[in-house]
Amino acid sequence: MSPSSLTRSKLPLSGRIVMFFIRHIQHATASMGELWRTPVSSIMTMAVLGVSLSLPAALQVLVKNVENITHSWSSAAQISLFIDGGRSEQSIQSLIARIKVYPEISDIKYITRAQALAEFQQQSGFGDALSYLDENPLPAVVVVTPSSRYSTPVGARELLAKLEQEPEVSFGRLDIEWLEKLQALVNVLERTVFGLAALLILAVVLVIGNTIRLAIMNRRNEIEVMKLVGATEAFIQRPFLYTGIWYGVIGGTLAWLIINLLVWFLSGAVTTFIGLYGSNMQLQSLSFSELLQMVCAASFLGWLGSYLSVRQHLRAIEPS
Amino acid sequence: MIRFEQVSKIYPGGQKALTEVNFHLQRGEMAFLTGHSGAGKSTLLKLITVIERASAGKVYINGHDIAHIKRQHVPYLRRQIGMIFQSHHLLMDRSVFDNVALPLVIEGFSLGEIRKRVAGALDMVGLYGKERHYPIMLSGGEQQRVGIARAIVNKPALLLADEPTGNLDPKLSMDILRLFETFNDAGTSVLIATHDLGLIARMKYRTLTLRQGRMIGGEADIVESLSD
Image: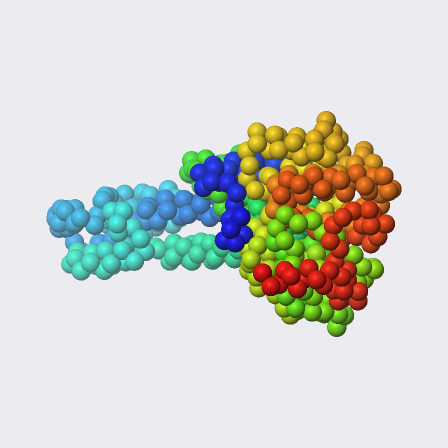
């Protein structure tokens, strides 16, 4: 044996590479088996992770649905152009013909003074009062629906300014203030979700870190013996890292299931509620690809938690 | 195989365990390390396996100075050394097979190779057929032999034993020593720490004696070995 062989393995390189992968698979399955052997504590930990992860996921679902709703509302934003009282029917028709070719506009609806009056009488409940008036006080209205690119608050405002330049238009009205408020609210909601998600993710990392710490303490004797017979730290820590990953995978799947159950539980009530507002929107849940994302993210968190724990605690265990 | 040059070890707290120890264990040699409890036998073995590091002087294993060996190289060094402990350090919740196979699993041998080598090692220590037993089901002597099988299964160049016969009766102790002799015949260097002087007297091997942390026996051998 030459001096340089002190730090060299006794196996050839090809054999080492093959065994590297075999060891990984063995460690992965072995750590799964380890969890299986202590079902109660494993299930408890996984349940904690599932619930912790389901909260950010639920908030994500909420944001997704709110965005969906506000998106459909904002695209329905309309501009009402009130026509100058003295304009003739002909000049109004020519206005419509002119603005019809604007690329910013997708649809135009013309409401004559008579139609406006009829609609007002029907909907306002002041129908009788109106009959005392000598003439129709309402102006003619051209309702413009902007194309999707101009349906954002900023775009619609721009379009409104342009349309107000038309001589026939007395003034225009774009009721987007509530839309802006809603969007600001959605922003607040999103921020809140991110903040809470960050906290809960931290909790997940800590829970896994602590669980792995206990696992390391339980196997202290074994770790000492392994170090004595020449196990590298990478070798000793691998089963713990896989345990963390398994916790993440199962916790993530559990969270996905919880969310789907929750959405299923809520969907009936929500559909009725939305239906009252004349919409037939469906409550969205998490898709299969989002399940994969969640499981990937959760397993990364599991790995991270156990890695931090292993780094700190494995080094401290030395044979004596 | 092992060479100590002016090695001292002072534990944190100021306790002097070893003072300027010199000795050389030749490749393929078998020797005893004796001394009273607290004379520094265990410390000397710990320095060889880098469980502790020398405060001063140089420790060579295979010509390598291991006083300053990097932390990540320590496992590879330990794979070259078979260690046997008085409190055999077996994993009680694993079968005899799993215990003996541990160094091979760590090294990355295939399962077929592991089976072959574990069977061979258990055969050598006279425990063939007890693979599936758990250590708790075995006698003290058998447990010690499981530890020995684990130490030799990886065919190390050096075998260290710390009081391997500490808990055994004279007949069993002799059996264990005979076992070490067979490994030594096969070319393995062996260093056995023991305070069982009666046992040593019956064998023909060199004896290194420690007293209060100083090496007082086998001086001639040391001079001889340092000059080569």
